[in-house]
Structures are given as C-alpha cells and as structure tokens.
Image 1 (cartoon, one colour):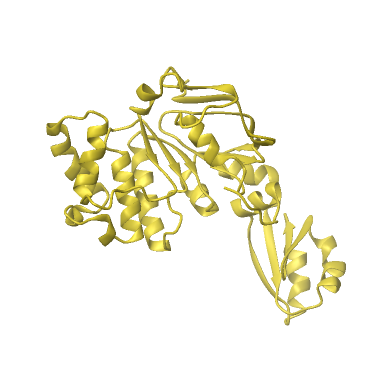
Image 2 (image 1 turned 30 degrees about the vertical axis):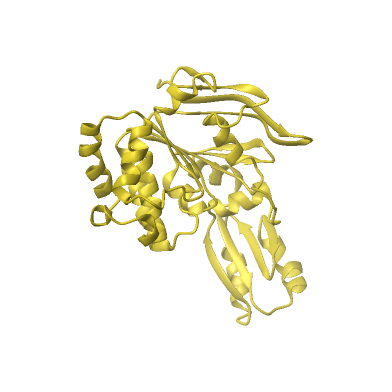
Length: 307
C-alpha cells in the first residue's frame, strides 16, 4: 500500500468560542486528487492553512513527507506548491520574472530556472506572454500563471484553494485540463472548491466537511450511490405547489423545495413522469442525481456567511 504524503490526525482549531475545525482527519496519497468540499465557514481554508504551517492547530498532528508540521515547515514546503484563492502575483514583474523570483525563494539555481521557466510558461499556454506583466492578462491567464508558479520547485503535492473561482467556463475547462495533466504525471493535489462539477471531474476522493467536522468521504460516484436516490425530477414554473406536493409526493422517495422549484428524488421516476405529462402547464426536468444534490442533502440548502 502507498504511504501517505500528507496525514492530518484529529485536527482542532478554534478562534475564541468559535470552533472552526473539529477532530478532522484525512490522508492524501501519491498520484491522487483529494477534494475538500463544504459550505462557507466549514473550515476548508483553515485546514489548508494548518497544512501549510501558516497557523497552528490547537490539537492534533500533521505529518507531511515524514516530517511534522509546523516544526519542519520549511523543509515540508519545499515539496509543496500552493495556489491561493486570491491573486498574489507581483504586478511589477513580467510573467517570466514572477516565476524567476519565486524560484529564487526556494534557492533554485539560475541554470535550472533558465530551463524550467519556458517549460512552465508553455504548460500554462503563456509562452507568448513571457514579457507581459500580470495586469495585461485575463483572469484565466493569471490563474494559469499562478499554477505555473506553484510548480517552479517541482512539488510532489499541490494545495489549491478554490483555484477556478471567478473564471468563465472556457477558462475553467482549460484549468481543469492542466490539473488532470499533473495528476496523470504523478502529482498529488489537495483541492478545495465550491464547484461540484469540478470536484466530480477532478477528484479521486472527496471529504465533505461541515462546521469543521468530516460528515462523509469516498469517491464521487460512491458518495452519490450511498446517499442519494438514482434520479431527480425538477418541477418548476407557475403551478399550485401544494396540490402537486399532495398528489405526487408518494411517487418519490424524497421531496425538497428550493425557491420556486420542487425536487422529487426517486430511484424509478417513471410513474412521476407519467403523472406530470398529464399536466402540460407544469414544467419539469428529469436527470440523474449528481454531486450538487449530495452536497445540498448533507449540508442543507440555506445560504451561510463566512469563509
């Protein structure tokens, strides 16, 4: 069995009376993408900060590359790459200079950087932007440059905190392709995201956390199969919701309402679809259950504040 690159054991972190992380444990192994998903305030970013030695846990233990964090933070971080939620590129340097300066923080030699920087710019599809400053780049280009910068020390483990937030669909798909390339090349990724399609596409395993606690874990497909009915029928539009609920709820295993939409969860929705077909004024959409349904079932549909 492969040995974990990073192991977190019973992590606890509080700020005053607010417990942000509560007895959280997980491991990440070579060549896998592990996703942390949860609502705002669930403790995802705090967990990543503890893994990076930026804050110390109140209790618990973090082992990475056979060393303890934060005691050996510098040594551990030499094997890590980081892409934070927010842009931290230096606006005064060109794209190539951003990579070079960052490489020097790791003590990398000029000869290594001279060969490595063009490779990373090509990987990020930014070869023609080498002499441009970040201010001249689109949002997607900046995120790819941040990813290239995180790879300057050839890390075994990447920690990515919502790396595609703010990107349009095309830029997000390009970023996904780059991350999939890295996993195929043997890199490990610890990813936080609010995009469930991103988590489903990229992650080998997922950990769902809520209020600082792990509430579920497994592969995306396994989690969906374990916690959800097979199909969902979304019913929306202008109609008598109370009447529809009274008449059709028995045809589904579970019904939820969000705003003006009713969600009927059923392993076999054929009877439900037949009943809906007799009321053409009611609009409906029939689809398989997905990771977003899982997320909402486990963590709720209410909007939360927090980070």
